[in-house]
Length: 157
Image (cartoon, rainbow, N blue to C red; front, top):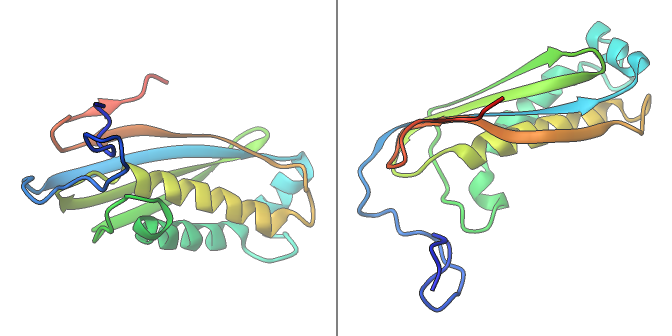
């Protein structure tokens, strides 16, 4: 009926059976950004946000969320991640979060990288909303993935 992997022949949602797949090294990199006022950006950069060290909290939140992706996203497999890294870059009017998730396993880690980025950005919002309720989260996307049957893929930036 469908070529979508999460739909069975009858069209019902299902978890993909990865039992027969061979484990391989898999890596995914995702990115997103949160736009904010210059005042908010300065408060985060200088460590003067009302709730403390915004980026430290966002980093921990993103890593923790990546580890729990299978509990958050229906039909995602719970994965034993080898590593999750989360970095932040200051842009002119925003902070960009970039996550890298990796493991040796039977399924990819794209969702884990995107959940890490999304949660980190939401945490930045939560930590800085006292200064700026108008922040805008966007551009969450997969940047690159390696490993598995489909091999290497990289977004055109």
